[in-house]
Image 1 (tube, rainbow, N blue to C red):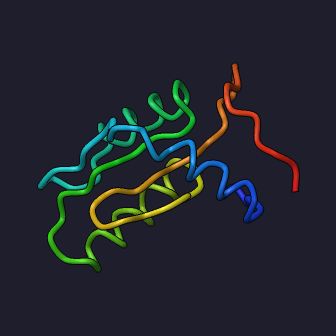
Image 2: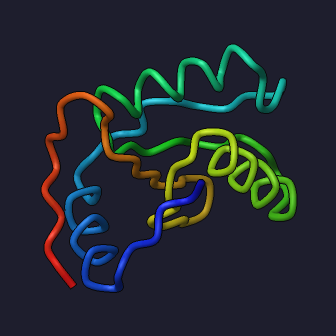
Length: 101
């Protein structure tokens, strides 16, 4: 279950994420069940978050980002270097209203 966003919605979310600080960080242990539980909780609360990934090589970072998106059911908005921006609308109280089209 992945989220499909229009280019305009993606641009809107990238703009919102610009000033955010990374709320979560993946360390040497990689993606653990505890990290995924924390990710799910933070996405539910904030909807749009930055995750910092400490892996050294690009392929490992790409694999971790892919795993995060798949496991959380979120959309990858942007990835620059070691930081990925993820978005998933809250199930209960949505805070972010996306533009149409």
